[in-house]
Image (cartoon, rainbow, N blue to C red; front, side, top):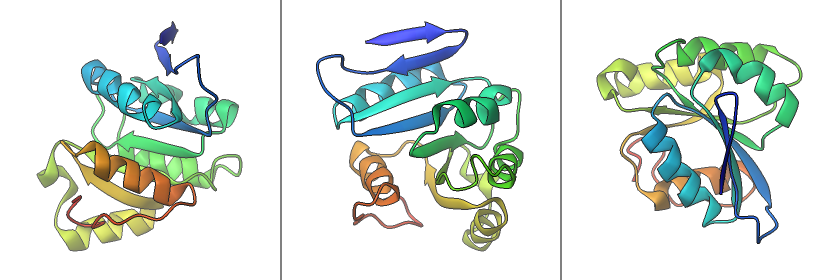
Length: 154
């Protein structure tokens, strides 16, 4: 079930109790719909927002277990948002996974490592990625183990 609240969507299956909450920031509504279905099917709640400007305030309010952050948003830069999240004491401890559909935008493996360290990303996923890889990465951030390759997204 999807609820829209001023450009914020909340995906949940009302029949189940959720273990973890994921905040996704992406300006592609179709992608967010698919993400919501995948996460709900795996026992997670998703709050999705397409407006990067709402990210820090929303993260402070809902206190997600992990944030999925698109690097290239229409209204914001994902790298700058990550740095803002990591500089705010209320959100600094929340793991942030970068996502991009533009691999060249991220750069080489060395540049990804440098950006990740600078901005505090725990991981970077290149779209499209499989539901298995997504869940392995999220589970890894939430205390589970991941078997996926952190560089190649497989």
